[in-house]
View 1 (tube, helix red, strand yellow):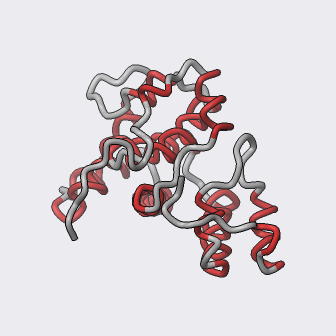
View 2 (cartoon, rainbow, N blue to C red):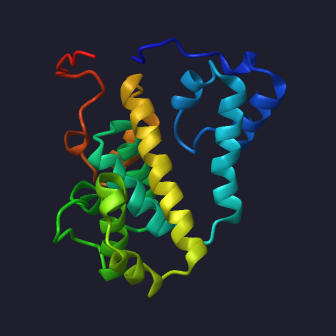
View 3 (spheres, helix red, strand yellow):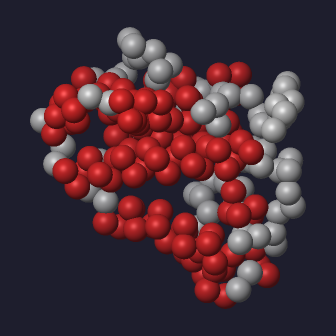
Length: 203
């Protein structure tokens, strides 16, 4: 259960409600982060419009975007995002074992370009200031500059979503979990639910 209450989306201002409805929340799940973020309705609308703009105008193939997002979400142990985006990888034809082992050097199902994207997602998330120029030069052999910028944005935004969901304990919805299991995924290979076996960290 989230650390703050969820918002009845039907009671949102019409302009916000229309954006949420147009996005459809998800093909299989209920609204999760949207219902928490809706405490800031206008910012939620802007965030959803930003994500829609990537869908409408992005040029990076979805396979690479989803590999990057699952990678970042695994690094940050975000059960919500790992689950949802592992389902999307499954819809793109990758096996769940790939999503489960995506951080391993010899991850099954990834080709050379997939691994390059995966490794870039790790570098942006963990060592962006010290990343070598040669890493980006390798990306330029495969992608154009707008695609590299788009990929970097999606990696960075994924990390923000991970922290938002983890901090407010927003869990994976049952709809996506059911699809994940139907794709031969296992709940035990997801990060733990937010708050499970948590250790208090003094701030």
